[in-house]
Length: 260
Length: 346
Image 1 (spheres, rainbow over the protein chains, first blue to last red):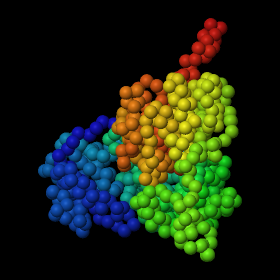
Image 2 (tube, helix red, strand yellow; image 1 turned 90 degrees about the horizontal axis):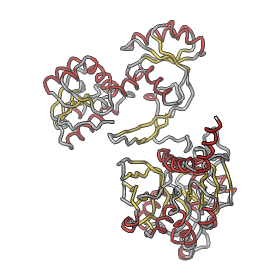
Image 3 (cartoon, each protein chain N blue to C red; image 1 turned 90 degrees about the vertical axis):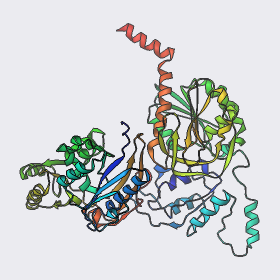
Image 4 (cartoon, helix red, strand yellow; image 1 turned 120 degrees about the horizontal axis):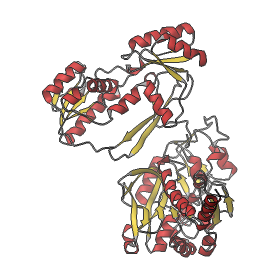
């Protein structure tokens, strides 16, 4: 992994509005990022549509833009401020989506902005269900039977091999919006249609339902020297089927043995 | 948290009362597969809250039932936070567990504690080591393990890497070890003060300087350091736990390691002129966590690469040793002759 060159100014993408039960932690992580940048003597620019957060207070970032979080607006901010680096990994799904979009329309290249932290390829692999599945297979990790569907027919064909119930998950949506557990053929058709409409790339993941399974999460970090650590793990009180945001999460896990 | 079964069955804890800092213990019961040796070795266990009944599909029994079966006293509902702070300030110390303190004055109990035996005052390794055992495939590199209280996962970690193992009890001589013509030697972790285990020092010195790949773990690392002429000292309360960061001075990489040691090697006493190098250091307090040598194939670590309990990252260190072991095995004249024979025959 190449060592990133030191930057003197960074644009941070905020997480936007906070919806309870959905990515509330990104509000504060963005704030902490600004504090860290200040400590390092780096000029910080924040763009966030949310005025009701200390992230957009006067003395947190050097320059504050309370604007809609769209590619258009960000391009104009970038053109005006000319930041050397972009930090998009602390704005939740919003930040990631925008980083990918900005890269794809060529804004980052045009203005010479370096994407800091998680590289573009890694963001894509984590967000795109198909790429993620391929990555897991590549590194020999178990994967739930699934298929990528761009149409109801794709999903129905899959349902012939893997029995119901099936989970439908639209790609690139916030908090898993538009997903659902289909227990009947009718529900499957409904969820897939809805999911394809809601997904910015018209893609849904259809996979075997893991309803009732334990849900464990991990926080991991990697630095430029390739030191990788697991910061902590967490266990959802409710099993799979109840979204993390609607459940209670405990750190560390409580019912796994050491080996697990 | 996790790993309490691995902790109580770790021979390095022989003679010690262990206080666990995580406030809820016993959550997943016990399972024979998690035992690191044939029995629990702790003198006692102290926890804040004991979880009964456990919640795990694999549990064979509760932790309490297991300890009771082996006669290990355990205490719950103790303010482990206060106890931990006390130990961190005043250092590890003698203590006494009583099941019924009626009829005994504070002074009496204090006196009992003061006179308590500790595993530092004599060589306790013989108490925990086992018999001679051979394991693994026949036609494979041969590693000898000197058992000072070896943990099961050290053995498993090696077998998984396709080596043949001969586990020898502590007390063997260098002649016996080298007489087996090994491709590698490991000196296992074990309990007690390394300076007490004098008999092993001569053996370790000879084996490590023979050119056979050598891996000293925890006590093994300390014995080698002493044999090389370095000094060890007792830490105030030791390093215990699965989150100790260790830095590789050669590469800058940091490992999160599992540690359980009350003694460490004096950095200033490492005989650099004899070719010894400090390889790994603890990021928190700078103490020595690993040694290597300029030209001898020696890999010495203070912590537990076999983890159990703990994060699996440092398992990679076994790869280092096994690579050296395999290289030696492949270069043997008998093997080379065999390969030549096969080539000629074709």
